Amino acid sequence: MTSGVRKAVFFILLVGVAAIGYQFMIKPANAHLAKSKISVETKLRKLAEFEKATAAADDLNKQLEQLQEAIKFFESKLPPTSQIHEVLEQVTVIAQKQGLKPKTIRTLQSKDNSGYVEQPLKMELEGNFNSFYSFLLELEKLPRIMKIRELSLDKQLQNEGQIAADFIVSIFFQNKNS
Image 1 (cartoon, rainbow, N blue to C red):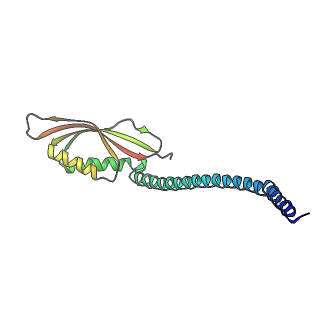
Image 2: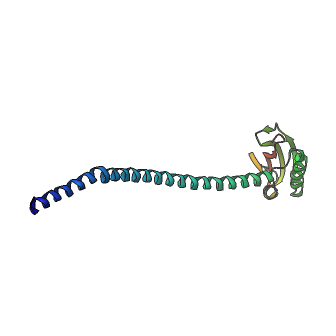
Image 3: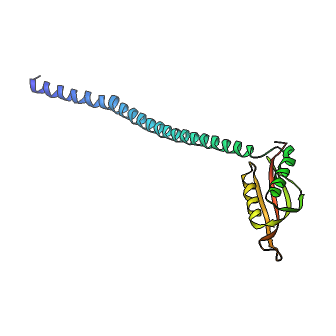
């Protein structure tokens, strides 16, 4: 064998080893690497979703804490049902202090809701309009949750500035079952 033939056989042998090495080593390694990259990208996407979910859960926890604080605040404004007479007395005292004459004050059917009881009072008062306005302002300052419904003001024709007020004030109390 001459040196040129030897070189050609050696070159063919080297190319064959490279081709076989590529076919059996590099190509499977590249396929495995591609699968690994896809797996890593999938896991990174899931991780990003989990991070978003965690942030949303944290926001929900903060909102829940804020709602619980709001519930505590409003519950502090709801006296127990056993204090209904005290609240009625306070409303009557405020009306008398403002110089209003109560024609009638009567309780209506209470509405029992989950968490609270609404006790409506039908009131008819007579007096000066400014006194009635002051009465409403005093009611507003009470540390209670109240709502005025069905307000009707009638001007008394014989006395200037005098009115007759007919309204329902609802006072809210804690439900004793809660």
